[in-house]
Image (tube, rainbow, N blue to C red; front, side, top):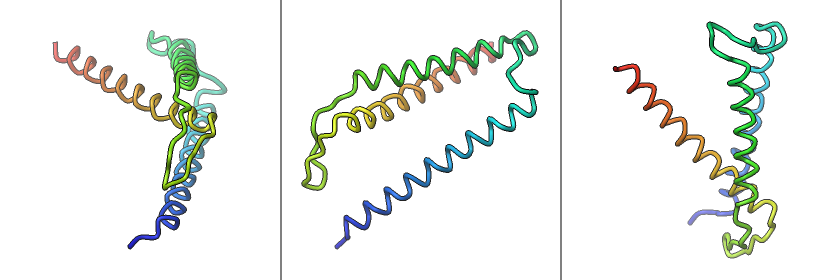
Length: 120
C-alpha cells in the first residue's frame, strides 16, 4: 500500500530541512541581537539581571542535555525489521526527546506561575 522506504526518506529530508531552518533562525536572531545591543547582553536592564539570566539559561540547558545524554538508553531497537544498535545515536535521540520534554514542561510551569502571580 505505502512505500515505507520513500516515506522514511521524505521524513528524514523534512527533519534535516527543519533543523537547517531552525539553525538559520537562531543564527539570524543572534546576529540581530548582537547588532542591536552593541556586541553583548547588558548586565542589567530595568533592574533585571539580563546577563545572569542568559548565562543561567544556557548553562542549565547544556547541563540538562549532557545529563539526559548520560542517562539515556542505549538498548538496541528494532525499526522496520532492522536492528539499530549504535549507542551514540540512541543516546542522542533519547537526549533530544527527554530534554525537549523537560524544557516544555518547565516552560508551561513558569507560564502558569506567571499567570497566577499576575492575577493576584
